[in-house]
Image 1 (cartoon, helix red, strand yellow):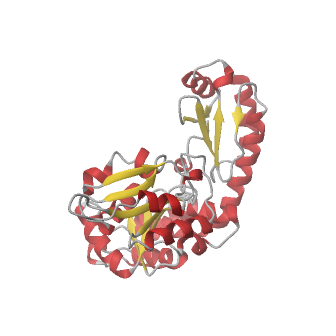
Image 2: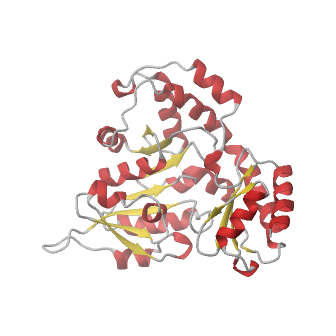
Length: 337
């Protein structure tokens, strides 16, 4: 089976398994797990922040950030197709009593003008805008790598109005790789950033939330509130340390995505937009088949993909997919449809 559903399906390699076995551990709630502490220090340094916090998932990281940055009832500015809007079960409202003001933003990042237009000042009747949430890469828009200057422009407009900025950077290292810039160039303008260890970097579990020391101190309390207090977590943090060494390998995933996209675009009925990172979106409306039927036929040919809209199928390359796998998958897709 060639699994192209997501880069979350990667299996830990031998180095990660060995690291988990040999991990030095302690009680992380007491701050005594040396492996977690090392992971947090290295992660913070990599994204240019003062401190970082190990969390079980990217969604928890985003939810913690929103809770720390805001006051109850405030509004959050976010792209209407962002992960925090589409894929986090309304957590901003449920966990933090926040309202989301959704904006249809070009390439998924709000322009300074949209930030200004969407901003609400606190008064007797309105709670005001409490957070700007950005995303890079932008998942639902096809893994778009958002340029640092666009992140900075939106953040500057928010900061001019004393609004903090959180970056959902689940795949921010993919963005930095695609744009050939240091990841710190993307993260420097924002107040906090979350990135996943368990996607392209290949760890079996975990994400990092980074920001100022004061922010992370409060984030630890909120993580505990959300049930994310960890004990001997070095066993799962050790593979995360190994994952941080895999950033340079993301370029291979992008090359494989380009090869996959070119081949899929040659399949009758497939219309594919050129990928910017490791996500390939294919409009299959011209196949004459329902999207579910396309996925079923692909599965019968031992290729897994996922529905990403009424007529769209998403394919995602990752570190467990080789060039040969891509070529084989293309043959099977052709056979399937």
